Image (cartoon, rainbow, N blue to C red; front, side, top):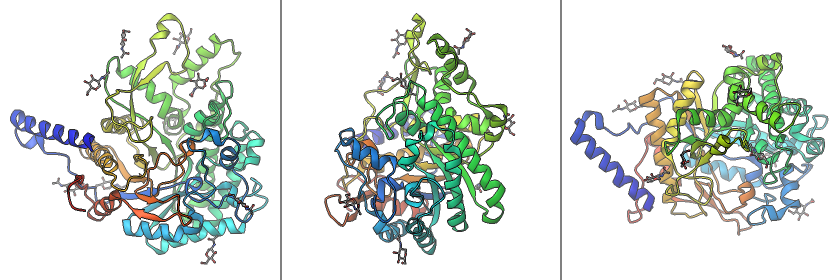
Length: 501
Ligand SMILES: *[C@@H]1O[C@H](CO)[C@@H](O)[C@H](O)[C@H]1NC(C)=O
Ligand SMILES: *[C@@H]1O[C@H](CO)[C@@H](O)[C@H](O)[C@H]1NC(C)=O
Ligand SMILES: *[C@@H]1O[C@H](CO)[C@@H](O)[C@H](O)[C@H]1NC(C)=O
Ligand SMILES: *[C@@H]1O[C@H](CO)[C@@H](O)[C@H](O)[C@H]1NC(C)=O
Ligand SMILES: *[C@@H]1O[C@H](CO)[C@@H](O)[C@H](O)[C@H]1NC(C)=O
Ligand SMILES: *[C@@H]1O[C@H](CO)[C@@H](O)[C@H](O)[C@H]1NC(C)=O
Ligand SMILES: *[C@@H]1O[C@H](CO)[C@@H](O)[C@H](O)[C@H]1NC(C)=O
Ligand SMILES: *[C@@H]1O[C@H](CO)[C@@H](O)[C@H](O)[C@H]1NC(C)=O
Ligand SMILES: *[C@@H]1O[C@H](CO)[C@@H](O)[C@H](O)[C@H]1NC(C)=O
């Protein structure tokens, strides 16, 4: 709240100064209406909301296994065994979606729920039926289903075989995706192959903080990404060759990209390198071809300094570079926060500790919700959108996640203020800078299991009572605010604590 008041004071000062110095015309605030063909939706992911972890013939996923084996790694020692129980309550979830008036609902399919063996030799009828029910019910209610094929959880058996460090995962993933195209494809117009590969690769295969929790010689994350990109491209081509002509859908991948803002020692070069090591790691191979040059040379050089006879960043063959290049019908973007990227001054002393050579710093004055990594820095979002426009030839950008965590307050003023500020940036980038943003997705529909943070960081615009056996849902202030924004297609001002509800 304080944060919002200070922003408002600040905005008025800018508008007034602007009027004094330049005259009224240039000072008009951003047009807060969404363009006519812009669509607005809301997202969740299977492990975070479904629960029913051992129902019917569902197998154990890496997140089931990780939370059960290492409860001490989860902030509140919780897990997703029940989560929001959306497996049993999906019809109620759809009523909330309907009341919100969203155009689409982005959900993910649990691999372990539909292929209990991991492989496509046996398909779970119950598992499939759940997703068929959900998809059909969305359509019956006029809500477009947007299906994420992989959102961080594969069957544990596949991890025992190496998971994303095993190149065979590319084939196993493609077999799994084929089942989804065959069974759900006729009802679905939009597929996301993989959600944020840089997140599960960097945190799951280079640290113990995310499932599968493997710390692999400072290279597990590069191997994981290499295979994830091959898997994505294989499934993109499969859709293109075998399903697109009959299903007429669109398919792409989504990366989580950080933004940035100016600060001491932040330069165009430090920003460029920060962007390439983060967003470019996923998107350069898809929108330009191969990994960014700066990643290839720096990781090769540092690997050599460390005595490796090869680069820790694997190389794509020319055939793979060509096969991966161009495999996206849209630029899928998850965005939450920003940093001030500066070069690591230790390198002046010949000490190379970070492959990127970038220290991503923050300003202590930036406000925070309940997650230590998620600072509220709306200006960074606009900078990121303009960079995507310039680096990738202004592709259609689908914002597939954006949101703010608190501890579940129903009077969630800070969340509304976050949305207001971030979407103002988005609309400005669209109207003034020609950024081709065409979709926006709220993260998230429900308060839900937030990975290692358990239930201590809640992103929902609808609350869930995790103490009730029924997992009772309830409206927050942001529920009504979003209803109004969606029905008017116009950003609404942020309510204040003493305004009537
Ligand atoms: C505001 O933006 C919307 C959508 O792009 C457009 O239809 C409308 O004409 C704009 N209004 C003004 C006053 O520019
Ligand atoms: C949306 O409409 C704008 C004009 O208002 C147009 O430039 C743009 O191409 C349209 N985008 C899509 C995805 O149809
Ligand atoms: C499923 O897991 C729950 C714990 O979440 C346990 O109480 C229950 O017995 C399990 N059911 C089966 C069929 O294994
Ligand atoms: C799917 O819907 C049918 C008909 O309403 C219902 O009988 C069945 O239990 C549902 N299955 C799942 C897994 O949700
Ligand atoms: C991977 O782990 C190593 C060793 O802990 C660390 O130095 C490096 O910064 C990590 N890289 C990424 C991308 O997380
Ligand atoms: C942090 O933000 C404050 C307030 O906007 C500003 O005065 C200060 O210069 C910033 N510090 C850095 C390191 O950017
Ligand atoms: C900026 O660079 C100068 C010179 O290398 C250094 O002394 C200073 O600590 C740096 N400041 C920040 C915020 O990195
Ligand atoms: C990737 O595809 C684009 C568009 O076809 C092409 O211009 C570019 O040269 C390709 N990149 C590589 C590395 O082949
Ligand atoms: C990598 O090493 C080569 C040869 O030592 C050097 O010319 C080049 O500048 C280095 N590149 C980077 C990005 O460090």
